[in-house]
Length: 402
Image (cartoon, rainbow, N blue to C red; front, side, top):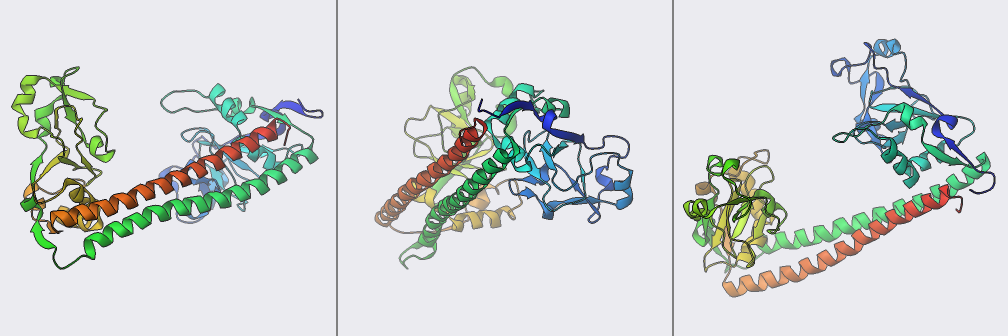
């Protein structure tokens, strides 16, 4: 360890205070729209406490609490759920914390900013993994948090490290914001062009009903595919997630040949389209040539294009606002959780050019989509590199080489 540094525990350099867990703990019914801020894990953000999202408790209820009352300079640390999430109380000088949080109060021997940096470090992440309890919902106790080891340099050195990190993190934050904006812009550019293709077209595009250009088969009733009939291997049962994630390799359920023959109407063929029909509605995928033979389940709709329409053109149209808005309209609104009946979907109007024009449209969209994905990959890699740089700086800080 660097000369002048000491290895201590958080308990050596900070005090801790849990929220009041007794009879005076404010239940949901005790919370109001004004009064004293009541802070839970959901209010902790990277920028500090989400002031706008706070709930409150009456002054008289706050006065009854024996502990869990914040002061300026406190740091709030999450012990359950979003384990390790933290935030400074910032401008708040008064408030109470939920039982899922603990107040971390740095002593005069340690910089508040230094503890903040520690909570972002890999060293702290290792301590969390070492001391956490539970599997389904990991948790920590304040007593465990006290045992976290932390390298402590002299206070002036802490302050120097915090200044360097703050300056670097400000630059990283700006670079990340720019990369995220570019990422969003790339996606919006493609979406804008996609929508314009189906709204700004030539007069030669013919007005058709969806039922005129493709066949529809809605998945079987749920009772037809009970889990008791599934076998370890055989014919695949394709689910909604195959449409949502546009992948057909990961199959969880299978049926035997007898059941497959019984349900052959629901068989998928290469070049069909499948659409998710409940929950996450309207997500579409084209069935590849290499598909394992199988059927759709009750949460999918199978569309089989006729010779009047290219499946790739149909997919792009179904991903555009034109179809998605029609889907919401025919389904009764955005809040509905299930797609309308097939007979209703068949009535949705689609403007259709010639096959040659469809191929031209698909080619243009494919080119722009390829470029969009390339740009998105570049910006995503940049975001990952910026996050890696932040971790590297924190690692250097707590190894005494910054």
